[in-house]
Image 1 (cartoon, rainbow, N blue to C red):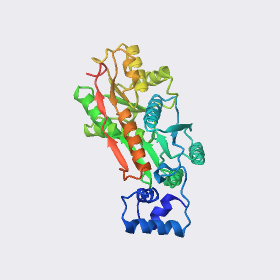
Image 2: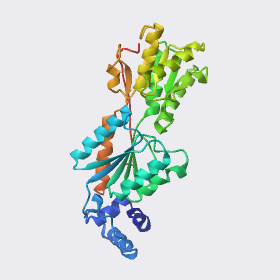
Image 3: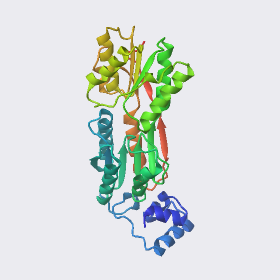
Image 4: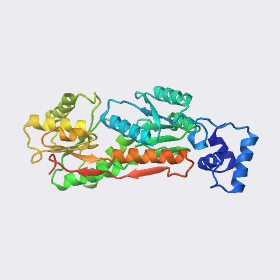
Length: 335
């Protein structure tokens, strides 16, 4: 029996159950009695580590990420740990890799550690098959689960996401408006976020009737640290007779590889060749000219996610999903 089961049987929200157990006065007498009756009937013993129940707490949040060497994920972890400390919470980090089995195992481990909540960093934790997401729902029946840049419609799961579709759609239209129409989309992830970005690029290109070939959609399957290999894939594409004078990349590392490719071809940037990245990471300042990139507001996402989690743990009604708009930070690689 979990707090989620109590909320279902009493016909109230999880937050309301938390308020009752926390002794909050912000609950009607009728609702309070209904919840207490269910608790008594099923002899429910609340998790003594859940802050939202007003009892003892470990003051600890579990954080899961697929790969902490990824610049985006590493920065997100930094922001989240910082925000959690500001709220008096420690964290336990699990680097899960990309396999479903290890993700589920890490989730179970965090539950056994009696954490107050769990944060899933990045969109690699969400699967197309509903059954593959069951491990998240099971955890959410015991503690709140927060998704950073992913979404799942499950009780006690909260999402804070960047609007990747519209960010990529608008960036593509902007590059087209400068006269660059033969654009390659370069990506390395088919995650929830990755699919949104790809769909945004495709929508803009199809709207302008410029997606002449699926070859313009280039998936890079290798290491995210091997920039020469990334540049080499674009060179191979060129050698096959595919003409392109712009690259829009799903992250800044791929965009740096596109700059390297263009330099090798002798193109002037941005006069002959345009490049746009994603994440507005520190890499944007690591090339010449500096990289135009989409700022997906990662720090704001992490701040809002932490605030939402704190609200949930305090028994407040919090939004299930919050969307942040990205912003194109124009620098020297686009016209």
